[in-house]
Length: 218
Image (tube, rainbow, N blue to C red; front, side):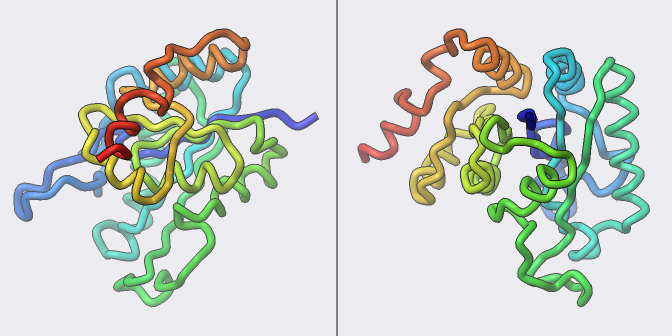
């Protein structure tokens, strides 16, 4: 019998975004020195491991396509993620990246692919390669594209939203209603534990809460 898994977006869920002082923008890290795990994220992954759930990273990473960083730097950031997760007693069972972008500066990556979220291709690929049941799985992310990809793959979707309620407008606009809304990966793991044990999840984590409903009522 196939088992479910937990799919995690990377930036904003596992690791922190970084501030670019030159452009005044916040973006994904482009160098291992910029890559830092969010507090509690490695411990949350370790807890999922203890629950017997495979943990798979599924992330859009167009930095190579945009010439922000190289394949070697992406590999180094991924290795740092593995090492720091292992140091906390956790393990990532797979890492799947979409490297494409339709406006890529690199012609090899300038394609309209089926793996770039909100398409569900990364989740489907991982499920096929690792023998996972998507209907028993969870997608945890901090973006609208994560929720759409998870829903299209048939997973339970969990939206991580620390101080990001402005995204609720876009969630409603895109009809991307996550199953749950939480403030951190640790909270998501607690809720996954409840669902795996068939016990009650806090009611204010459901999208029936005032957060999205108030947006829809505008």
